[in-house]
Image 1 (tube, rainbow, N blue to C red):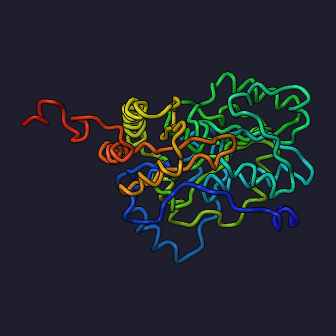
Image 2 (image 1 turned 120 degrees about the vertical axis):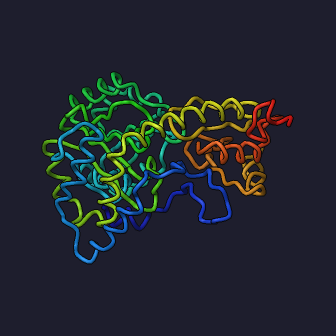
Image 3 (image 1 turned 90 degrees about the horizontal axis):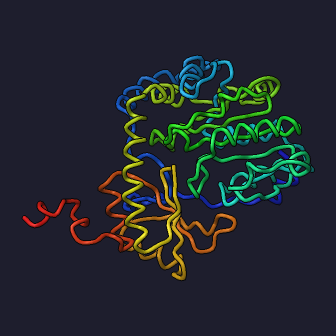
Length: 356
């Protein structure tokens, strides 16, 4: 990182509420974790009396199978954001430009700036169309799929075509797939292009954000650079062991995808009674509250014990909130707090049961 840029840098806001008495819809994490996690963690805790095996062979094998690549292409990192920073550290130099989508994850611009480079903002739904001089002038281009906070997912063919153009112009492509596991879309790891780096997060899909486990996928010179630059013992033993276990839980992933899709549809239909809600393939929904004050909507929900994300902190959004998709009971509490449940829905029962 660039020392001057660090001194001028700032933190960026995120979702997540530490109050245990608040139902947190401001962070987009699975409310469930796979069976067996506690037992794996307990065994790994005893193993933590020694340094981790820095080869992480089991973790790499599980991650590789999950995204469809060879284990040698996997770089273990303590979370998806660590993979993003590592990718930028080997790519960007002071004075470089990076194409950054907006509205999108606020850490992209911050991490670009910490390297001494400059973010060049591109609408998130136009970045795959970028070409010519704009692309050639950029050392790095970033794609978030599904995009956070909008939830739209990149078409695989369009992403592949964009990746090819990046290669033609010598631009590194960083694809953030933090939420792709909630969909059945293929990973960009399958492109196997030397200028493409994929960043993955485990902790959102498997409901363990505090574990800090993720990985990058690359090939060629960029893979060599990532492997050289990554910190020694980059994953703690519990994170590596639990992460490998979670990545092999195919039934859990399938059930999560089905449950999120079902609840997301139900929530969107309810939220549209009051807000303008965008389509999403992710475990969250972006809502335009219109002429209502965002602060008032957030405060009203919190008074009912529910935290939601102030999405005006995302570049380009002025009247938006973002809400996570969780289990049915929790989702009903959110919908009730936002005043969009009607009649029998508030009991979680169908009409006949509610009348008894």
